[in-house]
Amino acid sequence: MPAPTPFPRHLAVPMLAALACTFAGNHIAARIAFDHDAGVLLAILCRSGVALLLLGTLVAWQRQPLRLPPGAWPWQLLAGLLIAAQSICLYSAVARIPVALALLAANTFPIILALLTWGLGGPPPTRRSAWLMGLILFGLLFALDVPARLGGQGGGADWLPGIGLALCAACAFAGALWVTEHRLSPLRGSLRSMLTMLVVFAGALLAGAVELLPGGLAPPSASAGWIGLAVLALLYGLGFTLLFVCMPRLDMTRNAPVMNMEPVATLLLGWLILGQTLSPMQIGGGVIVVGGIVLLSYRKQA
Image (cartoon, rainbow, N blue to C red; front, side):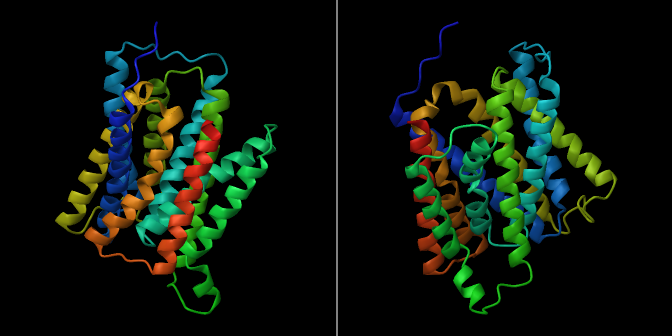
């Protein structure tokens, strides 16, 4: 079967930018839901449920068999559990700290993935990659306002847990990417994604049933919270599905770094919708982080 013809770059880049903004909007909607007492697990159930429905419809329409290669099921389960952990950690961080900071910390996953790949027998980072990783971490120090914290200016009781949860989300996502690339690459993307969302949905349901997170399934206390849940589920489900439907034609080898504008879009939407602002030093640190990630992504795809 011939490979699908890629979209022209002047179409692919705006499409990826729109998808990045869609994912950014999902996190803003999640914060609105959390501000109105919605539980983290309820939000994950909503977004994974809609994504599962859309991806299941796609897999059924494509008439894909649900059989996996021998030995693939444990890895598929692990990938789903890692994405479930990433979702819980990231949404828990979004509920505690400004959304843009949570996304900046979570977007350090390329560094963790490179180190994980090296630790598991892959090639070590090049000198250029190591320099870019150091640059990203340097920018992250200012984006997270670490100098001010060390200077004794309190950031609230939720600051440290929020940053820690966002970094845990980065670790979980890096692990899921490693499993996908090295153990699940023969699977078709839509089937792999559907099974991943199935594990995420079941995992969130089980965590709620055993009360792993107190209040994790709590409903919103106001209509704005319900609207936030509906919007986050719609944006995530559509964005996730469209990304995998269109990915064969988006020339991700050249265009993937465009997706790194998600933290920038989150910063703007957080300011416009939530009134969340960052200091000039934090914005400068964020620019360094995003720039370093873009350069690192181009290096990986080169």
